[in-house]
Amino acid sequence: MNAADVFSQFHKPLSRPLSMVTCYDSNFASILDEAGIDVLLVGDSVANVMLGHARTADIGMQEMLHHTRAVRRGAPEACIVTDLPFGADNTPELAASNSALMVQAGADAVKLEGCLPDQVRAIRKLGIEVVGHLGLLPQTATSLKQTGRSPEEQARILADAKSLEEAGCCAIVLEHVPVEFGERVTEALSIPTIGIGAGNKCAGQVLVLHDLLGLTTRQPPFVRRYADLRTQALSALKSYHADVASRHFPS
Ligand code: KIV
Image 1 (tube, protein in one colour):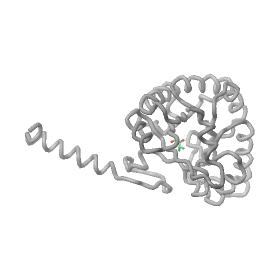
Image 2 (spheres, rainbow, N blue to C red):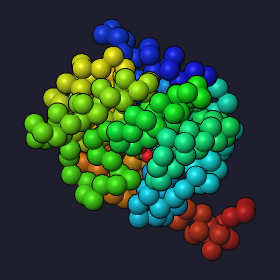
Image 3 (cartoon, rainbow, N blue to C red):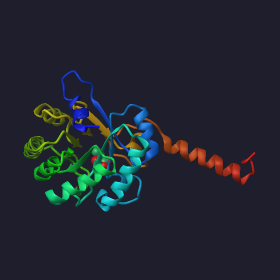
Image 4 (cartoon, rainbow, N blue to C red):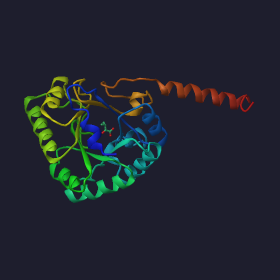
């Protein structure tokens, strides 16, 4: 699937916003695909959400390739974007060769954090689509506070967004910025912005799957929980434990 074709449908005044959700395994990939989610993101948030690390920067290419293969197995037809993990895009050459590995593993596009136009150009030379990521950058952030509040910060993020667009990105994730600023960036670009904590004027929205489903205990304030699966899982497992202990299972 050509990720640019998918993203390009979502930056027209009358188009509905695009839905993107993180995904790390094959079972959930099939559920997200069946639910009609437009794009599955194999996010490096897999580090915290699934693997128990403190930071997204704690994982590397091998983990991301492993999870990308799993997601592709579960959703053969889906549009899949995979994060280049911390360090995997240190130079344009490294970013390009690592992106090629992600595509071999099943990704339709890669996502990289920060303003790295040379890396974007090198990846695009291989014909691989790239999604940018600006605003709060979890791989290097020292706090989770909102970005893009001051005029200086806004000018920098806007310039970065334009530079990524010029370099060939097909979309830009915009994380944790003020709503009005999310709208301003969206209007200034001709590629879609995918917001996470960036207001409802972006061309699309992305959430971390486990936050959305209520499987995590701590979530950022901008997350909306659509289910409370942690409570349901706990209740199911306690019932199973009690049934085993009391010989009510198997019956
Ligand atoms: O890894 C991730 O989950 C992400 C989202 C926050 C967009 O990059």
